[in-house]
Length: 129
Image (cartoon, rainbow, N blue to C red):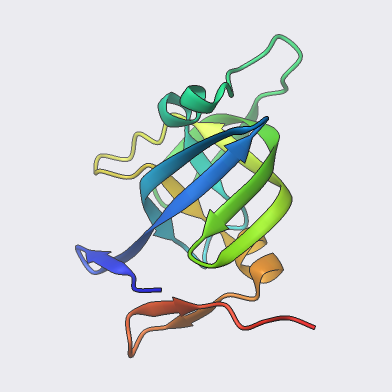
């Protein structure tokens, strides 16, 4: 699957499935420096993911600063030919000063067995035993 480079950063599209609703989310950054996946609140709201009174807010920190997020388990998250089921994502504002709808972190990459081929500017998902 081909990656899209924006300002020399690798982006892809993900497909989120939550309670039978499927949405495509473009402009998701591939980030090996991020432990977990985070998606923009205004986009996942289209699938019915909204903060609830019982949600616990967490503060995450990174190069872009700090952000309050809540988490939700989704039915699946798909990148190209790879689908990871029963996957927990974090949801936040994603206000980092440039167009970004999410970050695909190491949690997804490890479960999917993702290979990032920078020579070909692509992602590969070999079949896992």
